[in-house]
Image (cartoon, rainbow, N blue to C red):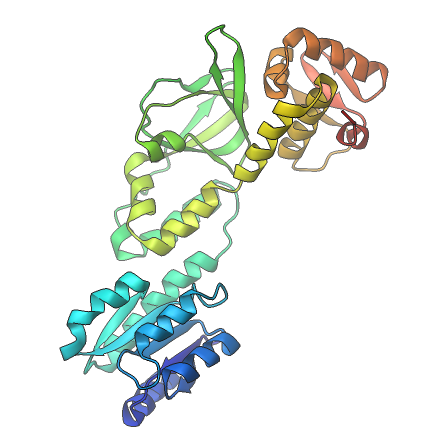
Length: 353
């Protein structure tokens, strides 16, 4: 399907010339003769890209950009300013307001088409859905590498294999990058002064971990340990910073990839604060099921020690063992040899405080 471009230009010969060039390049072109008309058309048509003159009657290009960025449905549409040489000193204002690019009049056909193609390509990366696995991450990085500022992203796959209970990094270490789980499961935890372990996060295939220390430019505040044999990909610190800081659109897409599980973590903290021991252990089992039973198997089995389950639930190990025994008697779970089998997920989920 051909991309739709909205051209907002009050000069008729200029408008017709640009529209003709874009049409010959197989773009669908809609035109507006002034800023007010352009805003209305953008809100109605939702084009893939907007090209807009700065100096126009009724509503200038700055006003158009301001109104469109306030509307969530049009705020992310790539926006290219058209400007005369005499107006170049004002371009900084437009770029600070959120414009993606500009073309200085007069420009030739190739300049116009290159600018349009470049902006549409960047926009496609943001809209694209990437698989939550190593191939998806590599595809995202490969696409990002097509943008000039990100061409130096590493092409190496720093994949490492870890055994169960092996530490990936320790509390107090300085980060070398962020980690992505290609296979397996990982927990992050920290120890209190009394040597009690507190689980700070659970991660599965397709998820990042260890990035907060990089964002804060600080040491790790917890320790990452493998729960189940894992294959872990290290995204170097330099690549992480490039993805965050070199291009605003790529940065927003990357942040979304990082932050998918934040809401879940907030809910987990609330439950730890207010629930009974039975409810905490039940919720911990439900959480493990929801995060790791990706194949929707009937009776979900997880290899986990009583201590790790207690740390996830936020309860004493002895209390967790007693509660598991009760759940076994109630035929909610089966427990043997370091494995917990969830027999009745719905009852665990609906357990009252």
